[in-house]
Image (cartoon, rainbow, N blue to C red):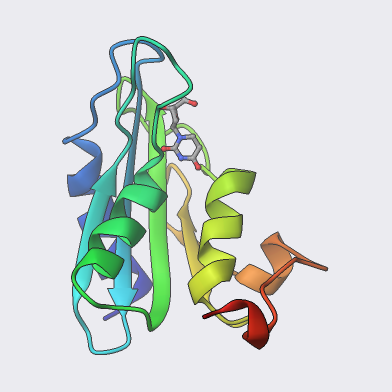
Length: 137
Ligand code: THU
């Protein structure tokens, strides 16, 4: 699957966004090592804090279904669903990626003209914390 194909699925996921407070629609499409794709959108809450990002929605759906081996994620978003620039994952989502993904995990961001930029988790979250093997029971 090309970055552009994965981004098309992220754009579709964006239309599922529940964002009555910020009006930012965000979509993500997570590619598993076996080729399965999980889509996610942001889901907001009147209490703001419980809001979950599109990336975590996709990752948690996949983990629930038994997937833990991920290759790439495409992320896009914008006010009222209009993409005016790249939409990089927040710090919390980067840390959730770190739990399951290696340094070379790919993050695709889209530009308004439809071109995709590829980054790695190591670039977006350098010097990161991850559990030592003995911490995982
Ligand atoms: N949001 C995401 O879905 N992903 C991110 O990585 C950053 C922020 C959402 C959360 C909230 O619903 C909206 O964007 C505005 O912050």
